[in-house]
Length: 619
Ligand code: ADP
Image (cartoon, rainbow, N blue to C red; front, side):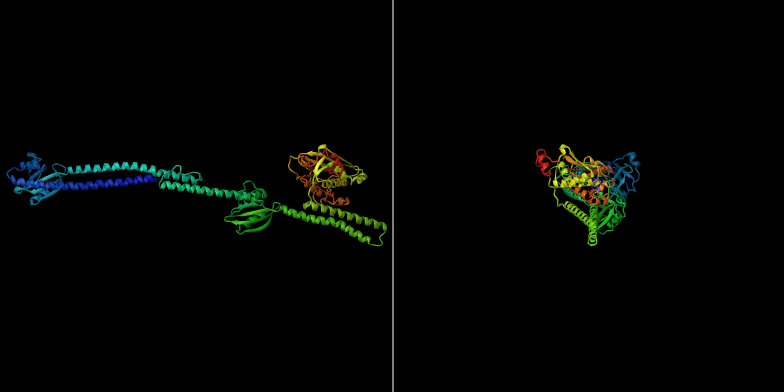
């Protein structure tokens, strides 16, 4: 059984007081008994001497009368015993009673007196029944005088004193109980409260304070102050730690690199948002095994290396089509791994490699032709008509080379950021007509019709005039190239709220919308033809550099495979977007968006409309 402090105190007090009371009762009782008995013996001795003197003085008195006389004088029981041990006189027995008394010769005190000595004995009286102190002395005529003192009186006195001591002890016990209760209230109650506060603090409630409950100016008060100080300090440190942890977490969460901490068995302990994105993990991926994170040998091998206890230097691994650059640092139990997604970088490298290969190939074809034909031209025996034809072929290929180099230079300027949009308010219709002028003769020969029609509110755009001219030139060139005789080419414009809002939902759309957000109105320009169309499998790629549906035909028609890539760059340079839709054998529509001029843009298109129409689209 566990006892509380106050209970222990109470019980120890109780034990001490009980022991003291018992010792006092017994000790004092025994001392008092001895002392009283000694006093009684001394009294008896004095009275015996007196009795002896009196018995010597009245030898003629009959022994029983003498015993009565002596008893009256000494206030004791007096017995006179004869030489033969017969009781001759007794102050408390007369006549028959006296004669019935047994012989006292065997009594040790009587025997002592008969031998001439004073005798003394403590014994239970056979005649009276109670314990008595007997004292004897030799009397006249060889008799024995015996005085007795009932020890009952001593016992009674001792009992009274012992009861007194016991009573005081009991009182002390009651007082102790009250004291210990008070002590409990004064000391153990605040201690219990402190314990309760400490338990609450241990359970995480660091806002609890002992000071409010325990207001003592003693050690308990000091303890409560110390406890409060401890809690305050703990709270401060915890707050600091929590702040640092939050900062750290924000830092890790904001990282572009995926961070995964794993335990010694490779199971995820935590993963930042980038890691969750890279490995397509759930919101709370804790506890996922390496196989559950990525079923790729490369990842499993990487985790194994990370857990081997050595830092892992940057290592490239392929996981689910992604190129990842991973590093790892061992922890006390587990490791932390960092993955950088370098897929875009690798893709860019691929694109560049392809581009160099494509460009070289494109340049090589006309160059080979020029070289071949010019070598043939050097032959002096070549007939004149052939010479002329070959020279024309050389020129055609040189022109082609020129176009490719021009387009490549344009593209490189656009991609390197060397070109800056210088927007003005430009009339879409004027620009579309102006760009068509180059193709008008060829179109007339082919019997292709051309029309431009814009909604009044979509007549003007906020664009770079030379860029817009090039966009139209490239798109109209393509349209004419792929439209058979008697076909139609149309340019239309309307206002939309977001770039390619209507056509971007079309499944046949190619190209990516990169326009600004919704809200600002845009002008959507569409270049429609009734040409051969583009197979839907090719549609998403026609804006890539050198991508051609039919390379041979494109080359034959004078295409470079760069026209749409340039158009895309120019449109996106304005914040707009571009896409295409097509039906095989029925025609193609390329749509692009450009910003609508707003009230803050310089000039008023409606006032300056005539001016804009005149000067090559410049307001
Ligand atoms: P090219 O110089 O070969 O025309 P572009 O980049 O302008 O290169 O076009 C890429 C490819 O898209 C073309 O080779 C052609 O196959 C296809 N294309 C572009 N415009 C049209 C169109 N209006 N009709 C049919 N096909 C087109």
